[in-house]
Length: 215
Figure 1 (tube, one colour):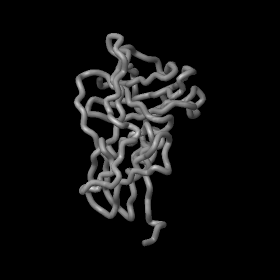
Figure 2: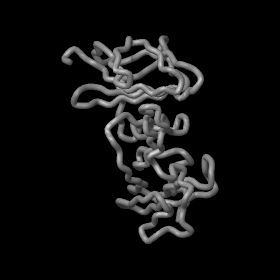
Figure 3: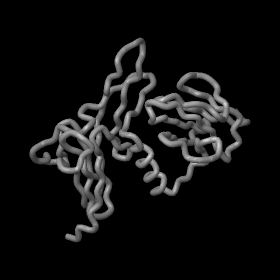
Figure 4: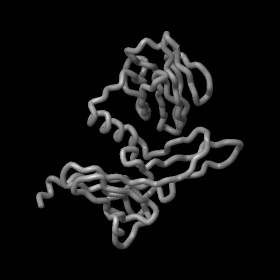
């Protein structure tokens, strides 16, 4: 076996990979209730001594393999913290996943990841599929905002974006930079309208709708 063909992906402690359907959702605070983590064993700490008959190495998480020569491993050596991480090994092209099913109710949910993990993940996904977003959130002089992550998607009703300030101590001033004809920014999180330049408070995430002339 040529080990140079082995590809690794680690879903580290407290990281849940969107690409592999491993999402960590925190129930939003409503009526003063404490946030509840809807994902069980989000750090991949509970693993089996030997993988089961489907090749799954974890007690709580399940998963599957669509095709190719690949497998899931509970890695106790490389990890962000705790005892283990989820390692995805492939020996060539393959489709492999981790999953967990849980029930939700209507409302807002917050996706909590290790800092910069979503940025790195989505950059890789967009690069792989050749997609380029026309929506960016930058400083007033057009530079990257440290500690800020953002993504935009086009829906049948227009463009939606999320802007997340990873810095829990400092607010961030950001400016919408886009080639689209945008007439307004609606903050769906706060149900208010925003100017092209606005502040994202420390540790906050905004979900935005970009309005255009036809709306």
